[in-house]
Image (tube, rainbow, N blue to C red; front, side):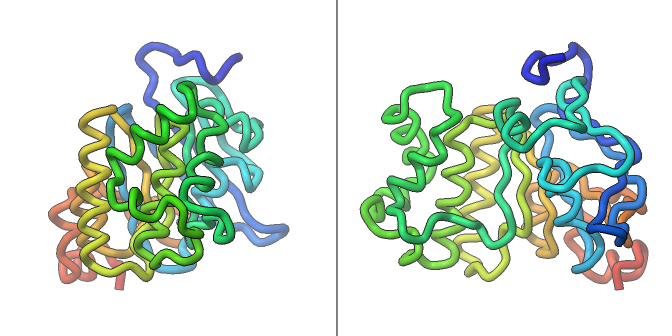
Length: 244
């Protein structure tokens, strides 16, 4: 079945009983979740709980040892990362992984490889969303600040016009002013394009400000769901959800 052809009525992303790990070390212990089209879902958890492993498995970089992953109702559990990207999954990994020796413009051109519109028009549209990058188009990506590199990583990902974006710790090492800019930018894109977001994060302000709902991940399993206003309060998270 072609994963680019959605099944009517199906959630955009559905994960059922997902298990994965590294060699003989199990990390994910049967994760199930759904993300509706246009929804922003946050996953909150401490380091070592399986957040990055989950996103890498959803992107196809790690094989699932059990369970199913469906995109718009189509089973993509065995699909390659390239096939998943072509089907509409975008991924911004932890650490951003831009091309430091390439210019900002060249980084964006790399993001256009799967674009459905002409490269020049795609980049022009992205720069309207990320105007800060206009001043740095000819500068090497590695010369940007950490926050600017994160904006570039997001912009590069969005050049392919994905249906869902997986974000791994997007606020790590970033100054507060750019964190606010990222939240506002993603909110605007979500409203304008119906972008769907699944993010893993430890920054309570960011995850509560962007998410429609928040899932708690502990030791490789989803333990409960909380509304964003609960995720905003560290005391409530520690006391009622057991994050401490």
